[in-house]
Length: 348
Image (cartoon, rainbow, N blue to C red; front, side, top):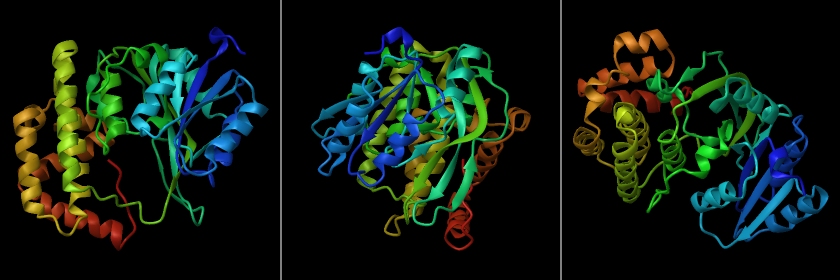
């Protein structure tokens, strides 16, 4: 067994009903140019052949593939189980139906080590599962790293998925948990919990190193109204942690809440034609005003700050103006038309 101090990066792979895609995912990890990694694979009570595939790789790569076989408890619990077992200095993630470029681990780990960073972020491709066509390339434009303490507003730039990042392991191992994790936006909730314990640097690797496979019809993901309450409860629990431990980051939390609840979640709710969009926007605005009130006057969502940083912050500033002018319904209709008819998806 490889000693803990020799593991540079642990990569956590949750597995459920992915026997068709799992070998390609694992082959991509076993073919990494960085040799001192481990893949911690969680078989989350999968009813297919996932456990047989995982046991085979565990035998072929002893000490490098570590299998957790457990009853189905969902991705959230599996992620914590993997973090507890991880031996690496840094921890990354990969979805079991995706795959990584050969230099994924080395590029992220090297960037994080050289900058002594809490997070390293790489680019990724969204790839149509059926055709293999690249739908978009994201987070691959060169950008300067930043210190969370010195410029926390730039946390808004980071996408909410963990699989194109590596995190300092000591941060994740001491991270707070949620009493009732949401089933939607759980990846974002995970990031917000991690940010609450970070004050160091974030660095970027401007290369696409992950192929994120998009299944047919999943470019628009609807959310049931019944799921919204659990999201709201989770965000309030996270806010409580920030109030206790990092009150200086509350304005950043408000900006992130506006982006992911006021924009992204409202859009996903709008995809359900049975929803009253006007009522949904009113409900979300009331929730944000009551619980994350600085979104309207955020120091991170204004012309000066947004234009000086560019990218997602500029788009967020624009849509904030749309929101405040009560034009969000028309904006979402136009956005949905671009996706449905023009097949253009603007990422936030």
